[in-house]
Image (cartoon, rainbow, N blue to C red; front, top):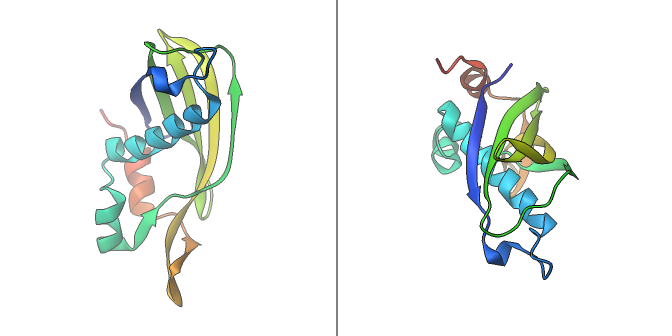
Amino acid sequence: MTRKSIHRIHVEFGDCDPAQIAFYPNFFRWFDAASRHYFENCGVAPWREYEKTHGIIGTPVVETGARYHRPTSYGDDLEVHTWIEEWREKGFVMKHELRRDGQLLAEGRDVRVFATRHPADPARIRAVPVPQEIRALCDSDPG
């Protein structure tokens, strides 16, 4: 079981559609931000720094989805609970639960890979095996 991380969000008026309900693409933006905060909370350096030392430029999404249970609107304070549900050879499945006052509003799921710049063409990226150093940080007990 990997660590869990909580990323806090305050829903702004501009996050909402004309019906004053948070516009669904924002959920993916919030999930994406929560994924980076998850790694930072586990002790992984920002990707800019990690690229200099290990060549990893980040964790691009290769598959994503969400299920919506209840709406949210501007003024709401939310929490995105995030963890890695499954490790794979070159990536992982990340789960997100968006909550307001403990109530589940939405669930997200991302499949991500660890990426480096392609050696033949630095403008391209390629997936690489999960760095064991990162996995160890995510699997460790924060206590």
